[in-house]
Length: 427
Image (cartoon, rainbow, N blue to C red; front, side, top):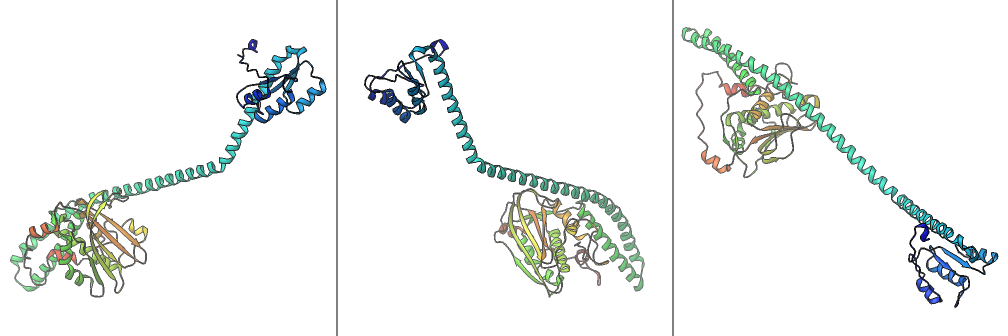
């Protein structure tokens, strides 16, 4: 064996007890035994080896071993036999026995691995299926998110283009109205008969409505001048209660839910009143006879990214919502609701500029708006406005007294009321 490159360590035993103690699985690579031993026989040694270390090759080597005895020994579990007259066969026999042992070991290892693989196959299939389902879901979410982002970008670009167009038209139209209004004022000084004065009053009213129309266009394109101050929306809603009830009619019930400790909002106080009134009138037109109008205020922290151009960016906001129990909006109307001149109302009942103005004011103020609508159940407009680092009590204490209204001629309404009574929201 040493000639074949295998170092050899030999452990020799003679008695039965010594052999039984040495026959331990994994302790020896091969067992060589004489058929006739001094204190016991080789067949007994083979029986002990098969019981205690069955994987270790067992080779008989004897000078008295006959053919029949050798065959019987192999039947009982011996690996091979070599006669002392043919010891030249010993090295080849040992190498073959070790190779067979290694092959059996490799086969059992492969069978064990295969069995383990089969035992875990179903589990691994389930795990892989679950991983694929998670990956597929993530991919679908990415596709949906990309589509939302693309829709939001297209809408934002469309609104921006329309805003630039309407801004230029509004400025030019306003210049024409300035000339008309100036000439009306000049003619009033020269006209003395009542019939001509009434006509001039009608012309003045038409010019005022045209001026309000340009204000709406400028609001949508975010070109109007705003005077943002800390405003308590709770106080604003309370002070507008009678105005809202008279504007939407007595058949509609108004409910208010005002949060205690509401943050002040940094906005133009006059414009937010017009926004609330505009949304309330729009809600009234969406309801049949009767219905419920709910106005709610709350402190809100937005964490998610917006999916539409009108929605707010992450941050702290003061929220005011106007909800109705009306007809709701289908998706094709919802996608165009802030476009100027888009309206679902009958001809002559809406200009399609109300929500466009709301959109422009809120965006110019640094806020956002969210619409939740269900067909047949109603719509909720949630307006998010930037907060002020102050308490509501401080805003109440610092709020200036109401400004007195400028007297107007009999039959002529203030310009703000002229706008308020125009049902210009598109829905």
